[in-house]
Length: 60
Image (cartoon, rainbow, N blue to C red; front, top):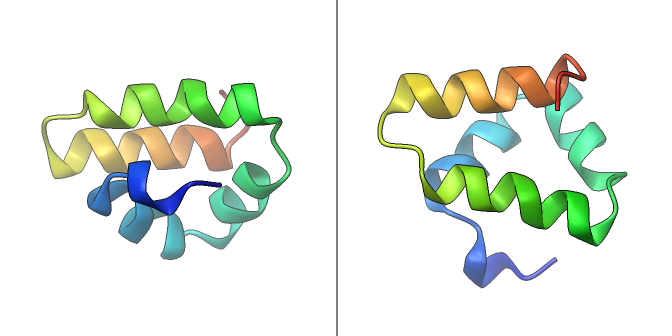
């Protein structure tokens, strides 16, 4: 994974949610890129939390 393209808020939210981090780690590169694209468009802390929670819950 190219950490230079990971939004800081996404990285922080991901590191605080073990389930989301584990799920993200097992995604394909194209799936990771799709999530990063969504993360780049997040405009609030709540949106980022919701994005990471949906990843942890398998809704992505």
